[in-house]
Image 1: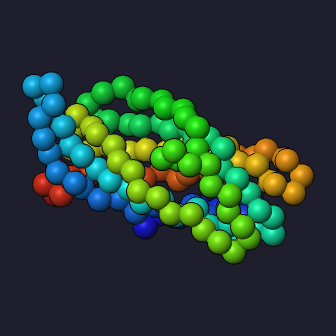
Image 2: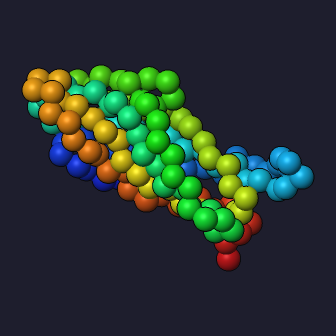
Length: 128
């Protein structure tokens, strides 16, 4: 598990290899990830949007931006956490993701960025 803390918000990431399949006559590698966002600060916060950089060893980096996470903009109280699962399709068995969440302190409407540490994807058969 990979973790990082930014301004009292702890991000933990666990990845998994989900398998291979053909899409548009190409082999794709499916990876899953579980992210836990833990509020270790003294203020309630809300996750408003996300920014991802996706690295596929056979393609150029892809950038994705979006509202919330999996259709939600969770409010996380001090001492609480929010966990969600998502996934990524790559055209190679090796890649990585990193990014940040845009968040707001609910007590004073201050906006801030929480960094998501780089986490790697690798199919078990791709490693020595």
